[in-house]
Image 1 (cartoon, rainbow, N blue to C red):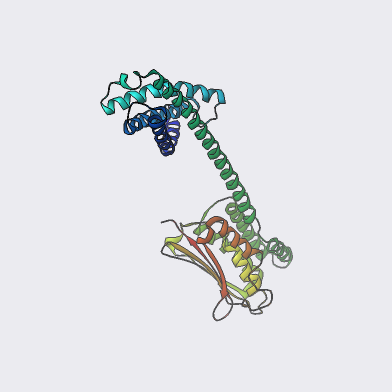
Image 2 (tube, helix red, strand yellow):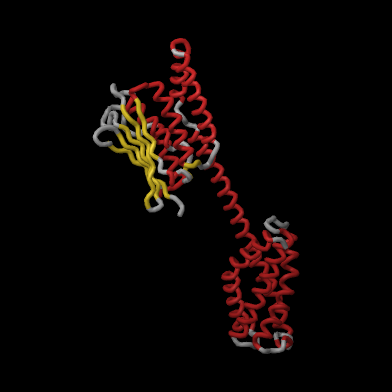
Amino acid sequence: MNLSRLNDFLCGWRRSIVPVLVICALCAVMLTWVIGMHFAFWPNLVFSVCIGMTTMTLIRGGYALLWGDGRPATWGLGALVTVAAPAGFVLGGALASAMLGLPFTNFGLNHLHANTAVLVMSVLVSLLATWYFWTQGRLERMKADTALTEQRALEARMQLLQAQIEPHMLFNTLANLQGLITLDPQRAQHLLDQLIHYLRATLSSSRSALNTLEQEFALTGAYLELMSMRMGKRLSYTLELPAELTGLKVPPMLLQPLVENAIRHGLEPNISGGNVTVSATLQQNVLTLSVRNNGLGLDQPGVAGDGIGTANVRERLRLLYGASATFSLSQNQPAGALAQLTIPMKS
C-alpha cells in the first residue's frame, strides 16, 4: 500500500470511528435484551466494539488496498464485505475474549443459535455500515468535484476581470504615436519603447495568479510613464515602495485601474493637471495600497467612484479575500481623491 492509499485509509478510518461506535452500542443493546446473549451489557459492548472496529478496519483496509480512491463495482464491494464480516467476527471476538480474560470458545460457541444470530447480525450491520460509508464517500467525491468546478470557474472569472483593461488608453497612445512620428521622431521612439515595456509587463502580470509588489509598481510606473508622455508637464508621479515590502505577493493589476481613474477623472479634466502618488505600507500583517491625486475631487460630475475600474477591483477583492480585504474611495486633502486597498498578509 503506497503512502497515498495509506493516507486515504487513515482518513477514512478516523471518520468512521464515531458512527461505528454508535452502531456497536446499539448492537450491544440488541445482544443483551433482544437476542438474549448470556453475557451482561458491558461484555456484550466489548465484543460489539471489538468486532465492529475490526470489521471496519478490514473493510477500509481492503478498500484502500484494492481500489484506493477509485470507485469499485457494487459486486466487488459486496464481496469484500462478505469476506470481511466473518473475519472481523472471528478476530474481533478473539480480541474481546482476550481483553475480558475469557476463552474464545465461551463467546457463543456454547449457544449455537446465539452465535449464528450474532454472525448474521454482524454481516447485516457490516453491509449497512458499508452502504452508509460508500454513500458518504460518493457525497465527498461529489463535493470535491463541485469545489474543483467552482475553483476553475473562479479562476476563469478572475482572468476575465484581469483582462478588462480599458482599451482607450492604448488607442490614445497609438494615436499620439502616429502624430509624433512626423513631428518628433525621437520622442515617438521613446513613446514606442515605453509602450512595448508596458505591454510586456501587462502580459506577464495577466498570466500570473500573484505578483510581487516590485512587479506591480514596475507595471504602474510603466503606465504612468506612458501617461506622462501624453500629458507632458501636466502630470507628475511618485512611487513609494519600501524596500522591505518589494517581495510581498498580491493579485496582479490591482493598482492600475485606480491609477487610470486618478488620471482620467482627477487630472486630465483639470487644466493644471497634478500629481499621482502610489504608496504601500504594512502594519500588523495588513498591507495598505494607496493611490492619491491632487486633481479634481469626488464632488465633481462623473467622479462617483462606481466605474468599471473600481467595480473590477471591488469584485476581485471580494472573490479572493471575502470581507477581510477592503476598498475605499475618499476625498484627498487639500484636493483630489484617495483610493485605498487593505489586504491581509499571511504571517
